[in-house]
Length: 98
Image (cartoon, rainbow, N blue to C red; front, side, top):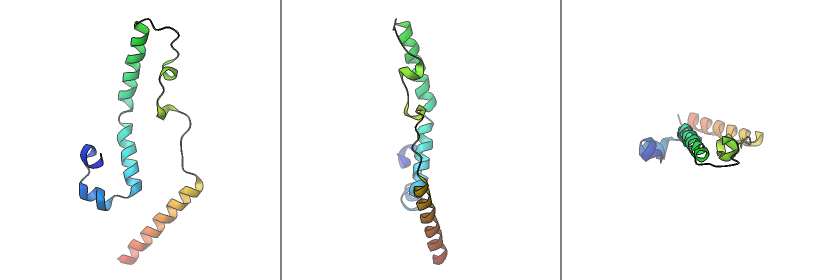
C-alpha cells in the first residue's frame, strides 16, 4: 500500500522509514477517506427514510464508524517512555557512527 497507492519510493520504504513514520503515514492516508464514508452514510440514511423505514435512530446510532467512538487507544505512559528511550538510543548510536 505504501509503495503502490501512496507512492513512497521502494528504497525509502525499505531502508529509510522507521516504523512510527509508517504508522503515521497510514493513519493519515486512511483519515482521507472519512468524508467519503460520512457522505455514503448520509445517502444511505436518507434512502432508508425515503423508502419508509420506521424506528430509525439518529444517523450516528444507525451506522457508527470506528473513529467516532469515544474510546481512543492511546499508549500508556510506560509505552511512551519506552519509545522515547528507544529514540534516544538510536540517535546516540547514529551520532557515534558519525
